[in-house]
Length: 387
Ligand SMILES: Cc1ncc(COP(=O)(O)O)c(C=O)c1O
Image (cartoon, rainbow, N blue to C red; front, side, top):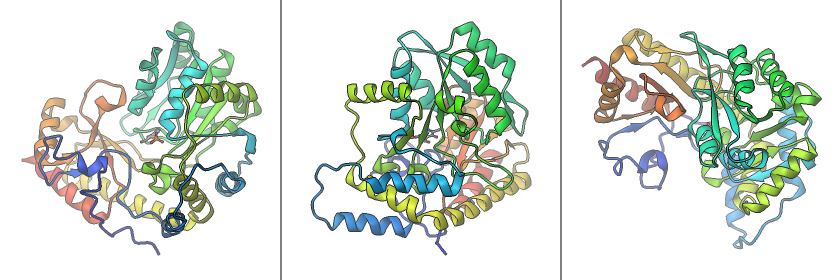
């Protein structure tokens, strides 16, 4: 049994979530449910591996040992029934680094890169910051769910001459776990028009009962040959500050281009601590994650029930995956009014404008926090929105 109820004081640890509260001008007691890391202690098996690494007393340049790949391969074999090959594996500090590298590796300045909006902010930034142009295809909103408009998807690809598609699977922030049929339709359009697919699967370990994550590259050999899969233990095991992502590229051609761009950017290897944490996570983290998923599912239920009882006009989409809930708060104010209410009232959420769309009153709630903190945040939201 792991203790996800334990509240750990993160203030004063130089973390994004808590230590930007004062500098951003917010009330000191602000509850931050924004950036996607968790307020839970890392699995003790990982902490022990890190202690052992500290105790070596020397932290010189590392190499990627054989056991590192084997740990990753074991995780994907056990949890996804996906057999990885060692030569596919490249490492980057973050998945966002990988998105930027991919944009530079597979497109030229001025090329169009497709994103399905709303989507994680750095998807758009990776395109724009590298001098490429966003080809936007909005997801279709049905109130409780978003779907892909395939006609619009293909029309955008053709009209804009899209070269690259940044797929978010599962999709942050809307919570979709794309089905095999949905991924197949998107992947086939990409194959038909020569569009390379970057599958950001960083949230794939957070999927709730009734849904199944399908690794894009496992759908067919053609999809594998046309895609780059971005994975990491960082979201799953709360290791974002260690910087360690694993990028899987079955195609030798795509892999060479990516590796060339990594060399050009002098992308560093993971640190000694990241290597050890990743191995411990993937070798010993199953039980911890399985318990965490039950805890998160209960947190998601708590939020839904609280809102249904107290703020029934907020509409959430179903959180099929991720620990991020996406809701339409527009019944409680204009985007400007809502921003002011949350800011002044001491609740920090990510808003729609962070996800490559215009402000319309949608917010994302990170529920990966002890239940007592979440309860307090809910009571505060009720007070803020009903006063
Ligand atoms: C879809 C997605 N990709 C990537 C990241 C961050 O990746 P990294 O910290 O490895 O750069 C996040 C973090 O929230 C995310 O939601």
